[in-house]
Structure formats: C-alpha cells, structure tokens
Amino acid sequence: MNLNKLIFTENACYKAGQKIKVQGIMVHSTGANNPYLKRYVGPDDGKLGKNQYNNHWNQPMDRQVCVHGFIGKLQDGTIATYQTLPWDHRGWHAGGAANNTHTSFEICEDGLNDESYLKAVWKEAAELCAYLCKLYKLDPMKDGVIIGHYEGHQRGIASNHGDPRHWFSRFGKSMDDFRREVKALMGTAGSGEKPKPAPSEGHPAKLTEGYYRVRKSWADKKSQLGAYKVLANAKKKVDENKGYFVFAENGTKIYPKEENVSSETGQIHIVKSGDSLWKIAKTYLGDGSRYPEIKLLNGLTSNIIYAGQKLRLPVSAYLKVGDKVKITASRYATGETIPGWVKERTHTVSQIEKDKVLLGWPDGIASWVPLDGVKKI
Image (cartoon, rainbow, N blue to C red; front, top):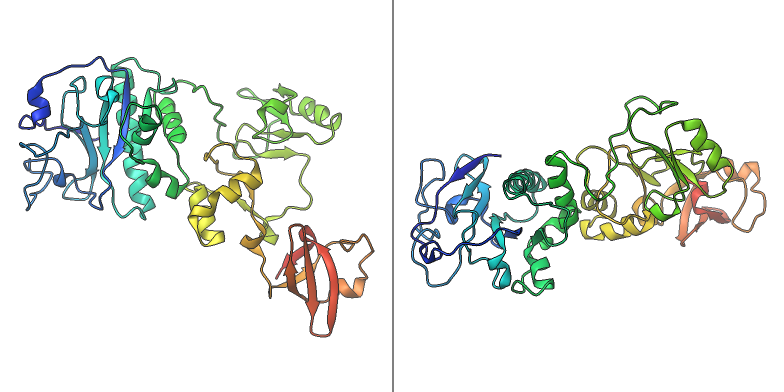
C-alpha cells in the first residue's frame, strides 16, 4: 500500500471536529471518469500534480461532502492512497447514519473499461481495508463491517447510490470477493470456503494440507459426503455413490474424469491466472455482462474462480449455425447408431437447440446429434 496523508483541514467537515467509534468501512467510487487523485486531493504536494481548475475538496465547498481517503493515480500514473481525514473523524460520505459508524474512502473511477486499472486500485483498496481492520480490530467477514455505498443504502444507513457495484461487476467482481480478499490479506481464514491453489503436478495420494472433498458439485456444499486426506478413500466414496465427484482444494473435479467435456471442442474454458467471469464472457460471448449465464451453467454461487478450474460455456460460446464440425458421438439424438461413413464426413451446423444440433452437408441432412457429440473444426 502506498499510503500518504494530506488532511483536508480547510473542509468544513474537518472543522466540525466530531469523532466516531469506527465500527466499519464504507467503500465508495467517485462516479466520474477521472482516475487522478489531484481532482479531489489538494493542494499539490509534488506527487499529486497541479489541479488546473482548483476544484479539490480541501477548501470551503457549497455542499457537505468529505471522505476519509482517496485511492487513484498520482501525476506519474502510479497508484496511491491519500488519507484526507483522521480515520475516526465523523465524515460526510454516506448521506445517512453510516456517517456515525463507518470510516470511508473513495476509489477514483476511470472509464470503467480498463481491467488493469481496476486490479491495481482493488489491490490498494484491499490493503487499506486490511490495515484499517487491524487498526480498529474489525473482522472484515462480519456482517456490515466492510460495505459498499449501495449496501449501505440497502441497510437504510446511506443514500441511494450504486457504487462500487456498477464498476466491480463489469469485471466479474463483487463486494463479497473484496471482503474475502481483505480477510486473506490479514492472514486468517475467512468464514467462506476459499479453495487453495492446485498442486503443480498431479494430485498426491495423501494430502498434508487441505482435503479431497466428495460432493455432487463444488458449489453444492450441502451435498458433501466427506472430506479425505487420502485420495483412494475419496475415490472409494464416489464409487459407492453415483452422481458424486472428488474435488481438489481449488474446486477442480478430479475423479471420475469427465468423458464428454474437452477443451479441444471449445465446450469448456480452463481458468488462467488473471481471468474473471466478466473477461471470459466478453471473450466467448462478446459481452462481459453475460457472465451470469456462465455462473448459472456451472452452479457458481459467487464470482470467485481459480486457475485450473474448468468452466462449461453456453452453446453460443463455441458453436453457431454455419460452423463445420465432425461427429464424435456413436448415436443420433434419437438413439439410433450413426454409420461410419456419416462420421467420416464434415458437416455444417444447420440448427442448435439446448442439448442437440441439426447437422447438414451439401447433399443432405445428418439428423439431430447430441450437442456433446460434435467437434468443431
């Protein structure tokens, strides 16, 4: 964290001189396309840069507004935090009762389309919250401790604003994700279950840390039949219970192996470091805001994903009418056997439904084939 201090001694909020007992932190974002701190923090200290309009907040203003800190860019483009009020000062940030309980900060927004900038300020904000939670002995996972402005409104303690959800969600992130990151930075386990990184080579026969978990799906915690240190014991439990799988600590399904889902067919995406649901939806579906389709298809209950995790993709992500495919299935959707000579041909997708495709070629129709029984070429 790059923490600096420039207290707004000329703002009427500071001059009011009221103190609070800090019970939480409210996260705001500015709602304006200007990521530079100098827009709000001043005068220039040699790092901020000069505000040519002199409209920073460290001066008498025609409205009652003041937060405890800002996160954004210095004039050289690096990310920094500026404390602008004592953390236990009563701020004018929430437009409601949260002013009496929560310290606060604003994240300077850009055009909301630069994921690298969001990642940088997200990291800075999480480190600031971890610092404040330690300072005031707060549990970031406790209800109401770290909240966005919009969550404050939902609780009836803040004005009707949507920040920072409107920005975070564009990149598949949420305040739940943020709170978990803060907890992780504090070096203690969160109340949520956050899978650990997968081992780099295979899966050991016996774990020294964590467990192999037997569930119907990673997201369905209630279906868990057991957690095992020994992989063979986890596999045995699965063999005894149809419809169950063994999951590694990172949420990856490791037993039994899926037969019909292959990255070569384009039907899944294997998560890489730096991926987000928004980014994946934008890549495959052409629109990041369609990420809930991927969440629903994979039974995800949060926006957190992990490197190595396999995500099923909606049909429209990998197959469209007019695509050329080969048939890999042994039977048509009707159950009839597909002749070898039909499988040797290259077919054109004529129609797509939920779980099957209609294939054709210049001289005829091959009939309906299961969706997982074709391979795009």
